[in-house]
Amino acid sequence: MISLSRHDPGGAVGHFSRALRECPVARTRELARLLYYLGMALRRLGFPNSAVRTWITSQRARRRKQTRELIERFANGYGMAKQRSCDLDDWQAFYAMQVMRYLRCFGKRSFTSAEERCMLADIIRDAWLSLRDSGALEGKSPAEKSVLFQATTIDFPLFYQAKDPVLRVDFRTGERLCGGSPCFCGSGLTFLSCCGRTPGEDELGTGFF
Image 1 (cartoon, rainbow, N blue to C red):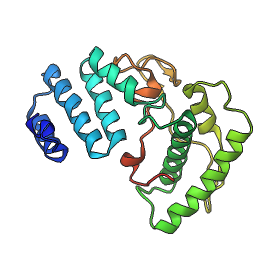
Image 2 (cartoon, helix red, strand yellow; image 1 turned 90 degrees about the vertical axis):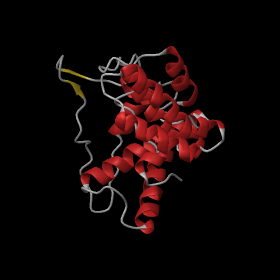
Image 3 (cartoon, one colour; image 1 turned 60 degrees about the vertical axis):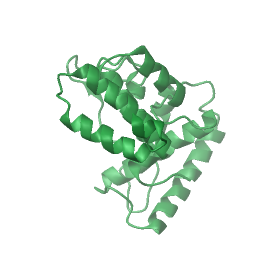
């Protein structure tokens, strides 16, 4: 807390991370508090998506009005850091979903080169502009748009497996999860904003354009 007050978010991240490693799992109140402030430090460091993920984890550990208000203020409907406009929010989610699909189906954790990243960005941007200009996104919620984004097929070079291999299911009830459903973890957030959120730029390590 002293590091945060002295405008040293890097130092604060180190302190909070060490405190989290030492904190017993059963002490959910303390865990939630540490995660809450760790998120603040990450955001000040310039990692807004990592901050959102940390706040969501805090909310899972212990539901607090203060944390939920912070998530609503800084996160969009996809569980990612809020951008300057809804159009940019949509693009960020679409891009991240397509990049994850590409990397997952090639069994990769990151791009091999800057050229590969640029090539993929151009392909995804063309698909995005086509989808956006078609008017299919008009009047739809983030949950509905997320379904459209997942259903959009892109023929990447040497890659023709268009379907996402991940099936999102609540195994306790046996029901398939949709974006607007309450999250099964008990956070009080929607599935799309919580456990089903889309990782953002600073989490993927791939960059956005």
